[in-house]
Length: 107
Image (cartoon, rainbow, N blue to C red):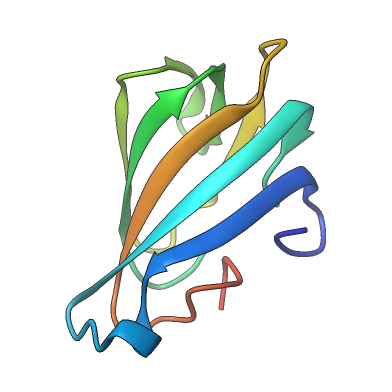
């Protein structure tokens, strides 16, 4: 589980503090069919590359559909959530600035 409010979501740190990464951390998310990440915000930006599946990014500007190959920018302090709307597991890479907490969104 990623954090409270998530459903069917898992996170794996690919490159993080244990690797000595001083500028960015890279995480891999898997969201099961019908699942979602928690609705949250934090004071740093992050960048998303969707690897597999389809879904909806919920943002203050409205819902934005996404699919494999899409990129998504999340600005600092923007409330956001990623929900899987496909029948397969949705996977994406998420980059965040170091030294943010790699394991829990919103921290």
